[in-house]
Length: 247
Ligand SMILES: [Zn+2]
Image (tube, rainbow, N blue to C red; front, side):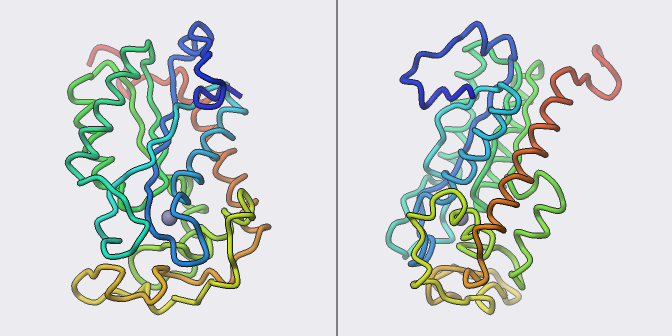
C-alpha cells in the first residue's frame, strides 16, 4: 500500500508519479447521531481509498476532514466549510497534486453534502486543466448495487448515520460505535415538498435505521466498494477520450 499520509512523508515520488494517478479522499466533520463519531465520512472514504491502493498501487493523499455540512447546522460536533470555500480548497489541492507530477486524480467522497460542490469543483478544474483526467465519485456511487444497499433503509432524500454508515463503522472501527445509543429514524428520512434541516426532522441526527446495522454488512459493503473501484481504476489507467486524442 502506498499511503502518503501514513509513512511520515517519505513518499517514493518516482514510484508514485509512474502511475500518474492519485486518490484524494474527502469527508466531513459533522454530527453522526449519538452512536457514531464525527469523523465517519472521512474515515469510510479514507479506508476505501487505502483498500484500493493495496490492490492497485495508487497512492492516497491525506484526506480532507472538512466539507459542506450546512444541513447539519445546529448540532454540536459539526465543523464545516462554506460550499464556495470548499470548492476553492478542492481546486487548490488538485492544483498542487498536478504540480507534484500526477496527471490523473480520483476524488473519493464520503459525505453526501459534498456531492454538488465536488461536482462543480472537478468540472471547473477540468475546464482549467483539459490535459488532466479527473474523476469525482462518492463511495456509495461506485456501483448501482452499493448505492441500493446504502439507501435501502431510507424513505426520502438522504441517508445519515444509517444502517450503511453504521455497518461500515462496525467493520472498520467497532471501538467507535455505541450501538446502545442508536435509534430508528426511518421516518426522519422523509422530506416534505420543501427540504428541511436535519434538526427539523430527526431527534437524534440520524436518518435511516442504524438498529439493523451489522459488521457483516459493513464488511461486504467495504469489500464491494474497494474491489469495484480498484477494477475501474485499473481499466482507466490507459483510457483515451471516446473519440481519441486530438478532438
Ligand atoms: Zn456520514
